[in-house]
View 1 (cartoon, rainbow, N blue to C red):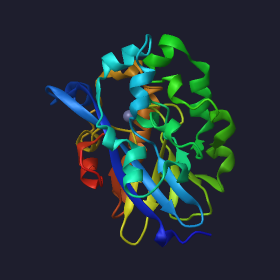
View 2: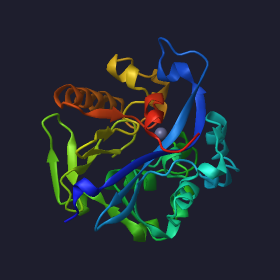
View 3: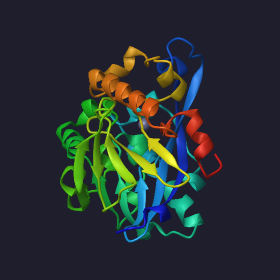
View 4: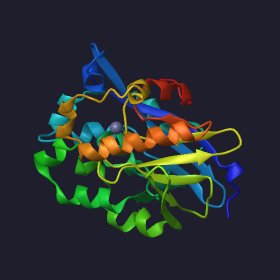
Length: 280
Ligand SMILES: [Zn+2]
């Protein structure tokens, strides 16, 4: 069993897209807002090099060149310094992209999975419900739900591990959040955070120094989350299920209020940028 005290966790950002701030905060939002694509890198003894999401990569530009995927680029134009792709950030640190053993996919929106093709030896971990939904939709409907199938490697089916089958244990915690234990670890768990996307995952990591709940896109902005300012209703068009989104946030709030020392981070929140290790 891995020594969890030795797990190393770092966050990075690979590019950003821009959207109207009032989508995030209909009360105070003004002008444009940058949504940085933050991902995590976990080095787990006896398990290997594990990515949690990948952010944007060059692949996004290639995959959105033609219609209908081009609509995605129009709706949320992206900026990416190629030095900041997950592959290049890791290589800069002496970790070859072939040495990534697992990529955990929080959900299949393009800002989270554009780098999947850069890690040829990785197995993919995701929720089965997330992947089944992605398989079911195509064309404009897929684009409207944030899905660009070209970003998913053609051998994904052979490399995927569904957390529902792979987990050592599955429990619903006292806050109503489903937790998956995996790799025999006690202090790193995957959490099911549905609503924004079907079967969306986050993780909870605890060590002597850290107690971090990475809640991915369960909300976009921490201040809005705490002040119960819901995003504009326009997002219902691409969210999976609004009622789940609201329930997930209630559960996360209860968890944060009850668990001393826990820090909740969201993928696209400006607060999360203070946790990343690369310059942006
Ligand atoms: Zn996102």
